[in-house]
Length: 163
Image 1: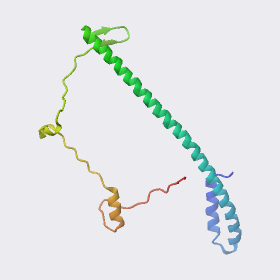
Image 2: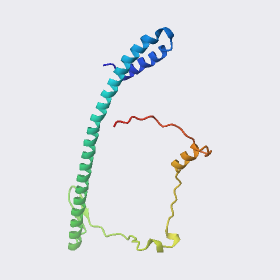
Image 3: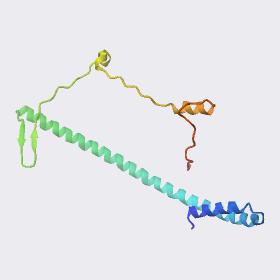
Image 4: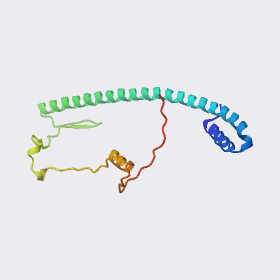
């Protein structure tokens, strides 16, 4: 079967030839054959795309499974570290040396616990503001003929929808 881009080139050439008066019927017959081949190729490509959907879904499921496994291992690791810390604190052991690594139980550091964020003085809070264009409103205004400095309407790429 011919490659899709070759069929497209042929269809474009035939479209140009169809403007020549003496060639109209021959071009029409050839065009009909190429259009059928083009459609067959498009259907085959769509089948391939759908097959890739199942691969993507399988990979997504595997990523989810591995992320869940990673989370479980991290939780287990943290639990075991807490177990070791609690026992080192209970026995008063501060450091253990071995040839491959050393284990230290270091005293906790001071951290702030906020009990009522609204009660904090302004000197101790940071206010963030975000400037973000409201693209839907800008598009609406531009379509209505309103000039919006710094914005214009462009076309996105066409897309393929497979239902």
